[in-house]
Length: 116
Image (cartoon, rainbow, N blue to C red; front, side, top):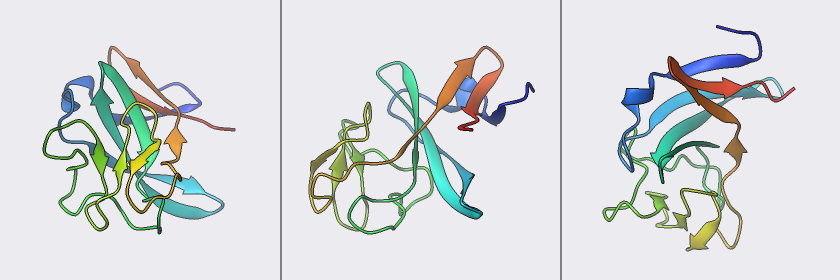
């Protein structure tokens, strides 16, 4: 693995609008939950934290999409987020979206990029 990136998962682990892959990131000395999903043919990653209050979105690990697989769903409040941007679409998130994380998909894996 090259410097500046950390393996999250193999590309085939993320199916279009399917289960997400959970992982952790470090921010200000704190380990925070995060997740990666595939939507619109692209891989996206976000901190696993609702815009309303800092609770994880998935009640069942890896289940981030609503039943129609159109939006990311906070299982506690029902807030909906655009999977492509993390923007709040409706609910108690009051316009506060998800925090995106930089990722890249390569032939051998999906990687979290160093933000430094």
